[in-house]
Amino acid sequence: MNINELKNFKIIQLAYQLSQECGVPIYLVGGAVRDVLMGFFYGQDFDFTLGAQWDLVTRLFAEKIQGKIIPWDFNQKRVIALIGNRTITVDFSKCKGATIEHDLLSRDFTVNSMAVAVDKLFLEQNPEIIDPLNGTKHVAEKIIKANSPDVFDSDPLRILRAIRFAAAFNFSLDNKTKSLIKKKASLISLVAMERIKRELFAIFNLEKAAVAMRHLIQLRIMQLLIPELHQFSLTPQSRPHQYSLLNHSLRTVERLASMLRNMKKHFPGHETFLSNYFNAYIEKGIITRRALLLYAALLHDSGKITAQTHDGRSIRFFGHEIEGVAINQAIGRRMLLGKKTCRILETITRHHMRILHLAMQNRITERAIIRLLRDIKPAPLEVMLLALADTAATSADEKYNDTRIRVKQFVQQLFETYIASGCAAPATELVNGNDIMQCMGIPEGPEVGIILREIAECERKGLLNTRQEALQWLKKRSESNL
Image (cartoon, rainbow, N blue to C red; front, side, top):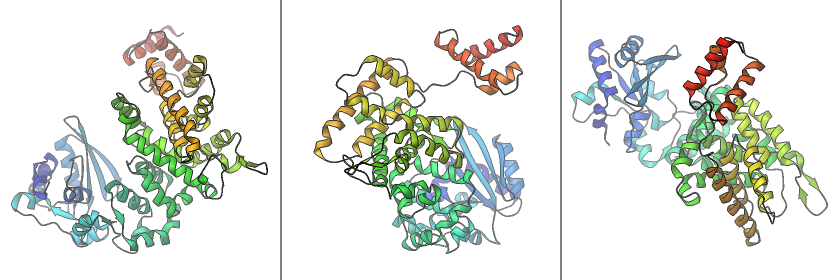
């Protein structure tokens, strides 16, 4: 794809139209230009900068495209619009400084600091890319380079963004940028947790999340965000473990990331279902099941930092999964994780040893399998995949092969039972608490939970099958004042 092809997008055409009507230059900046140079651009995210009348242009753009305006701050607004079946995000910002060059110099990384004048896409055969910091060269060299020595002082969240961009694009950090991150690392504590949470889970959602996580650990960024990880490096392990607690945790993340990329190999015939399952959002627009699973994998053995005992010959971690629940809940509160997210994280942590323990038994009863599936219901596939990754990341010793084989065979049996039992879709409620409060005219409280359970029971019995039926049931219940 080349720069000239940008004019084929409806969003660019509309920006050009407004540029002509309002008599102001509009520049396409940042990621869109970078992505075109990298050979791909999907036309879902656009970033425009202009000087005079930027607020007016934003409003006119939203009206013409029938989009919704979301103000970010005094100098930036976002327009969300639906074109066909695609949600398009268009950002408008006021130019920082007297010229577009000044604006680009104030941005984060050179690969994001390029622009093209929208009108020139239509008026010139070879429109110029405005590139004051050699971003074009750095895209070709696959380098993430900071614009200036104070780039992280302006916004310390850029530390995480640097790692994310490097992992997402398979780029390397420029040596000076890497040194700058080490020097400025402590500034990350100044960033609002809401922003850190969003950026961190964007990293966990990457295909190369494990690579990014190793970089964040090596640069000691993750230890600042989650201080408990410092204890991981100080916690030794005995056989069959071959690696330190920290290295084992990172290897578990790596194994999981590999499995998530190769579902066809591990669960042939179920790739589409599994892809949909793990790409589903737990917290809309922020945390997917995939991202949460990799986050949970990093912390699955957190209880070992407090549960370790020594018997003179080896180190034991009896009950570490229970200790881990408390530790991960505390971390979750600091990370501002939602209730559903915390419930899934607790399930993964509490039950991550169950599959290994059952797999090592000579006989596994059907009752034990059903009980396990019931107990891990909020996160059944997460627990299964973590068991495989955890075992694979424990030791490369051939003596451990039998354990790996047993776990793999039991997970296959468990997965087949899960599919056969009709649990192949993530459980979703027909209605939620807000629906009940609105339909019934009742406040938040225990009664809402009681009604939710009644609806769930009706669904299990086949009395309610759709959201519409559930809403009708609520209406009748309210009218009869039961």
